Amino acid sequence: QVQLVESGGGLVQAGGSLRLSCAASGNIFSVNVMGWYRQAPGEQRELVASITRGNRSYYADSVKGRFTISRDSAKNTVYLQMNSLKPEDTAVYYCNAKNSDYGSANYGMDYWGKGTLVTVSS
Image 1: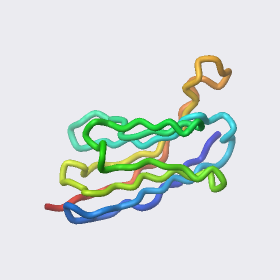
Image 2: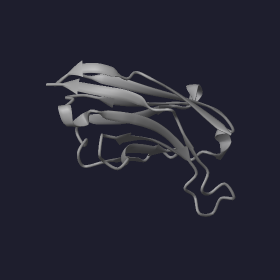
Image 3: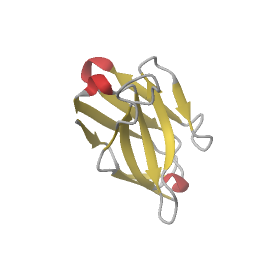
Image 4: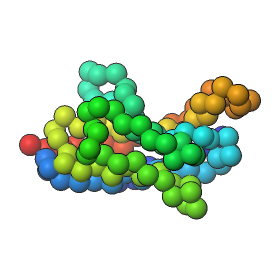
């Protein structure tokens, strides 16, 4: 089991910034990718950003240049720095931890946080 504890969501004005944090605990040895997803009303959950143990990162086109994902291995924590926020960024943001290595016996392991609401006002 992997437990994910999120923090940092809230209300912010357009153009402002927020930093989301996700602290992982448990069987974290089985994790090789952590990331952030979001789901807006009436929309499918989408991947916002992810980062691997090799420090490779991915960003959705909609957030490139504005969001930055990072990790602190010593704290088993992943961050999402969100700058220049727009109203369309409003969503519930979910922390995710998984093993995406096809060569691993842990492939397919997938854990989620409870979600944290980010609201960006005009």
